[in-house]
Amino acid sequence: MTITTTKSAHAMTAGEVTRAIIERKPLFILDVRNESDYADWKIEGGIVESLNVPFFDLIDGVEDVLPRLPADRDVLVVCAKEGSSVFVAEQLAEAGIEGVRYLQGGMKAWSEYLEPVKIGDLKDGGELYQFVRMGKGCLSYMAISEGEAAVVDTLRMTDVFEDFAKAKGAVIKHTLDTHLHADHISGGRKLAENSGGTYWLPPKDADEVVFDYHPLDDQSRINVGGTSLSIRPIYSPGHTIGSTSIIVDDRYLLSGDILFVESIGRPDLAGNAGDWADDLRNTLYSTYKELSDDLLVLPAHFGKTSELGEGGRVAARLGDLFASNPGLNIDSEKAFRKTVTTNLPAQPNAYQDIRRTNMGRVQPSDDEQRDMEIGPNRCAVHDK
Image 1 (cartoon, rainbow, N blue to C red):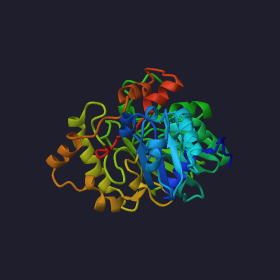
Image 2 (cartoon, rainbow, N blue to C red):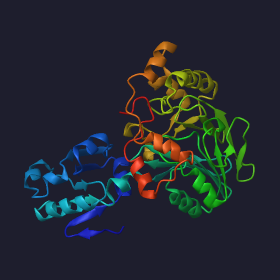
Image 3 (spheres, rainbow, N blue to C red):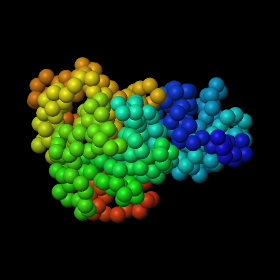
Image 4 (cartoon, helix red, strand yellow):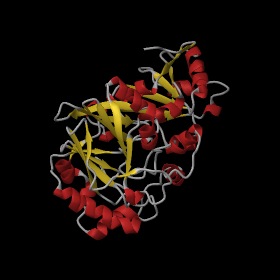
């Protein structure tokens, strides 16, 4: 591991922070962003404790904050892009705080880091991986079989998927979006173009897109690695009108933003909460009920780090979710509609601009895309 040194303050990468959370290592964070930014979005999970003291309160010295820092563990200083945290970390080191570190790349790097986690082996000897975006709560998937790969709900950091497939000796043949995303910018089309693969999108979500795509619907049959790995789409509206779940290898249910480990999707991000509430209930209580209880549910997002399981993976058996997930145990249609249409959390930051970007109607710069995605995902009815 390469350590960047500034006096006695060392860098800590987003990957190291992610693994600390997964492994439940104690971590104390001094977040020097503005109070409003901290309140909206911060590093959480595992055994993380944090303190917010804005940078401008520390410019003239760190003496006042020293008594509030723990003596029994390292301190990680966090800011938006890195510079302010380096300055504060230097001051803390000079004040005698040992083991002080700063987040390399700041919250920008935290938002973009992806941690690949193996979900399991496939029947033909292939593998299925989940890519955990800890800082945003996004989840992507790569199925690999016989030197070919398919990527589902690709994030805009397409180089991560390209490098991973290359390391596995696989060529990306397909990219699929389970729906038109509103909380993050899809990298599916770009990844398909880069790899020479096919980009799939549910046609009922594509009324306003301005690019070519291959329609993902119940009639689609996608094979990876010859005929060894079958990907079967299932129309499952509710989060969007075109939301489509994907069954991989007859063992895994990629549920998009319809069903999460601890909650269910929200139907309001295109302004149709009332219309789509009934679709959402039908998908969850009828379409999903007809599927095998033994399918492993793999969602496109998680809202809380409590949804992380062994090794950091986010997954649950469908039958277990019907027993434990509150969103699958609402007795009446009236109560369900109220749950998914009232008192919802704030909508994702810049979600309208993100939707227009995913339609191909605007082409923001890389920096603009990063700014649009800053903050939590808020795709579930419980994300606050």
